[in-house]
Length: 570
Image 1 (cartoon, rainbow, N blue to C red):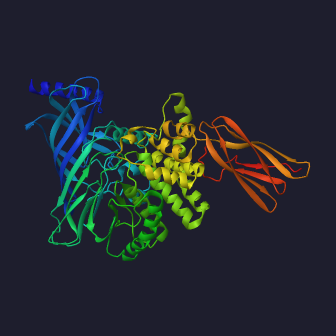
Image 2 (image 1 turned 135 degrees about the vertical axis):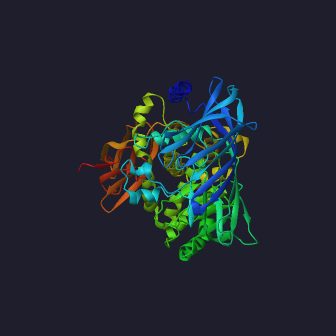
Image 3 (image 1 turned 60 degrees about the vertical axis):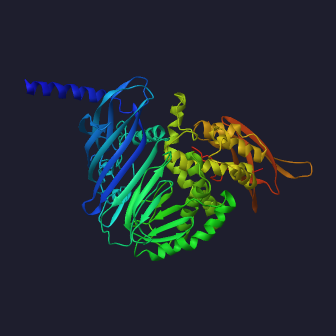
């Protein structure tokens, strides 16, 4: 009888778990103590989390997930242990491709919008794991440079959800092999937890006699504790007032520490020359950023990789990037990016990250001209072009990724960089600088979705509502620009003119540059072409035109193959 009872419970549980909505609860508060044992690659965690019922019905069952390499040890409510069933749950939101899920039965139903606090404990190992990449065909050698998260005896660096679920999350399954499944799940998680707070206390007892051992994390208001008066940090306390777009990350190694406000530089032995390159690049980067975004003041950190081929990663106030090479150009743009965060904080990802990437492009222009900047932006276009190809279908369903609300990195980093560049080209440097100088992230005005638009319109003294509607408030895809017609003609005094009509068959408008080429020279013009519209301009020329080129690459288009028009010989 006992066997049959257990069998019935398991069968019923399996059916229930399959039907479970794993996102009815959102974690709104984390307060965790993390103990690291690098020699064993182990992590132990104890603390509290707060769950809020975001569904429209009372809920008594919650699904909590951590990496499959970690195990649940205890879950309590008001000091009393609660029932839970632990099981593997396939999901590529973790680098192992599987989560350790606890299906928790709460002591009482939680009403909609009400919360419950749980005391939790879990532990296990976090080795480097490339499973979710190799199982979709990525070669191991390449995968390990992207999936570099690990706790190790000599080097530790671990990113959060989307890479490693080293803190609890509540998500549906994500599959790397199914289109944008992973990114959609991560995007949804970040939206739900954007206002969540997190407090972390990290410590390690490993190599306590190592004066250079440093433990750091990426939270705002980060505090470090030194040991015996050294400049190195053996414990760290990180606070995130709101998670926003941040991916909680920590790192630990025998770093050499340099500080010159607002920069904290953490380099590894053997990378002294690369660290010196960053130090040399700081002053010109500071000067550039101050001129555009104000004086950087909040602390930022750049930390070195043990593996020089590891893919860079940035979250919050921390950039992980290799200092193995002496690359002054890369050091300069990395510093500019982080210093923009320091000078102009924002809770809006498209402002916070978009401006930082836009600043990198401007810095490239300062170093190598406009072509260098456009080449830099082109790398970002490749990041979001595939996603934009799906927008045409999405528009029919009234869905998409508006910059104003997205938590998709390819949009709020890459597409946003283009948007800021186009705004700069449209209104000019002085007007954009004036608007940015008045931007205040903490003002009540920033609660208004049109706050940024209003600042720029006031500075530029022109209506930009159409632009913000196409590029920020809605996701209307990309423009597709071409020359519809070109009519050369001459005045009675034999002065050459050409009348050019540009057509935009895309769903987003733009002010686009076009160049008229003639023997011995060229003339550049700009014209505003709304979505599904045409625009015409008459241009005087010194000689008859031979060719017209639409767009110099500063406007992201869905099709760049139709941008050159041969003017018929007269």
